[in-house]
Figure 1 (cartoon, rainbow, N blue to C red):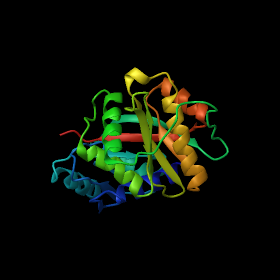
Figure 2 (figure 1 turned 90 degrees about the vertical axis):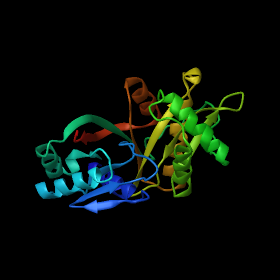
Figure 3 (figure 1 turned 90 degrees about the horizontal axis):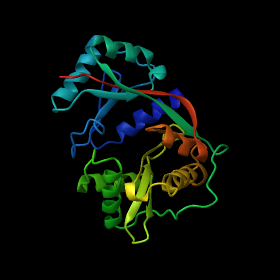
Figure 4 (figure 1 turned 180 degrees about the vertical axis):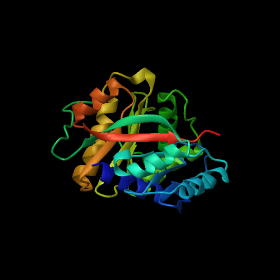
Amino acid sequence: MDHDVQLFTVAHLRRRPAPVETGGFVLGLDPDTTSPFINYATPLPGAAPTAADVAALVDAFRERGLTPRLEFAPDAAPRAAAALAAAGFTTEAEHTYLVCTPDTLAVPEAGPSVDAPTADADYFDLDAALAEAFGGEFPPSEEGAARLRRTADTGGAVRLVRAADGTVAGGALCSAPAAGTAELAGVGTRPAHRGRGIAAAVTAELARTMLHERGTGSVWLEYGGQDSRRVYERVGFQPRGTRLYTRLEA
């Protein structure tokens, strides 16, 4: 599965508005933001970059005023991991990823109604809801709402749950499939609406959409804590491998 996840990451970054390829790496760039969580690179599966290749990648980041940062499945590119470490990159985090397939998916029998956003206002409201859900780490913005819409318009899927007053209580997104798999991300619920099954509902609906409507072989995600992991496992996600986050400090 590591190979498929890594192939997906390569394809995902190549879909960014301004991708750059150098020395066995793909750097996905979005000119609308300098966030290192959006502008990052990944190695091709099995890549064996030289010190010069890594230096060229660092230059590609630096000349754009960006922090050199990568996300990848290290077992799919072990020589790239070694070359990055030798160049001074340090581990930011290492996360277990979970995978759901058509055979493991378990859609909850009851839960909140899940909808797809349609109007621009829906995307703005969802972006604001996710910003609040993640503690303001990613402030709401027109660019964030546009990225959500672009995900839906380019083969991915976006889902939300509304509160009783019509505001968006939470939601998530799933990127367009590649290499037979797709990444589900950004699962978030506003604090006032937690504990009502929203995360499970949107996760299950996005997985169902990809697996049963789009014909994707699997859907994968990463989790932020044991509570969220339990939610995902109840929906049918199971641990399958790890992804490494690494960066080079100034």
